[in-house]
Amino acid sequence: MATVVIQIGWLEMRAEQQAKM
Image (cartoon, rainbow, N blue to C red; front, side):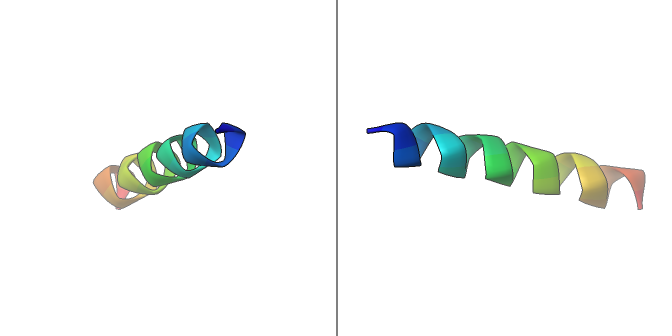
């Protein structure tokens, strides 16, 4: 499902933001 892809991308984005902080 597309929702799963969106969720994975969202989680990756959050992980990147946390790594920057």
